[in-house]
Image (tube, rainbow, N blue to C red):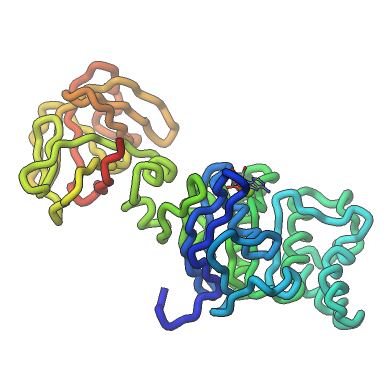
Length: 360
Ligand code: ADP
Ligand code: MG
């Protein structure tokens, strides 16, 4: 993000306590105008609390929230230019789709003719132009969520907050809505903060992801960086599959040694560290294959094999007893002989592993 652009949203040292529970601890985060930002974390990690503080339905215990550089603690929710979409749609059952979408405009005193124009435009954006007269009970879950989205967008908010908006939909509809949401965001250029506990959804949709756990923002980065360079054990395990291996540090923190093989790091580490290896970066070869120049290789034994359709997932045991997960694609030379107790060689490219601070 460029330093010169005033962030659409800033959290500055924001903490929210409920009695002895700290729901959000010292959150510091800038979100750029037009950015699609995902807040990702397990249930109870503080995601909704952070959204509620921004929407104005809740007050920070410490710190402040800014929109376009201005603190908003004195601005009531309906003046914040924020649209909100929840998982459970929260549509008024006795109002038609069009009446639901018109509601925020009515509240803001927009005249009828202007209201009708904007409602039609909003329903058009979510491809429900012909369903304005339907009641929520006459619409599918996906259509109801589109109405909720139209209602959140109809007054032209600067920021759109979505709290697990696709959580109630089945997988296929979710995939479809993900594409749809990205299209709409692109069309409108609105800043989106999107809460989810689904890592693949966050990876697929977001420009940047903030990973939350226990009320803390553990890492904020683009999806590729989060995946390739997780900042700690929690992030590494939460995003995708991986093995975290204990290693001994070689002299001066210049590299690592594992199961008798040594590898230099690009830059020495002053702290004790573990390494993260993604299964798709591990190459499994017959035990007799020599380690090539520029590769890191260790002997291993197959422990478990799982068929995944597109290939296999194998659990390998290293000579020091640690477990290493590897992906084997279809057509691999060992495909027919992936049986437990087979000795193999496991190799990876040294730049495909990330280093993590050791945790006790
Ligand atoms: P998430 O959305 O990530 O599931 P929440 O932000 O809802 O997490 O909750 C974070 C923590 O704050 C949880 O431990 C939750 O129990 C607590 N919490 C949230 N809202 C309240 C509240 N109104 N009163 C007391 N505790 C709350
Ligand atoms: Mg929540």
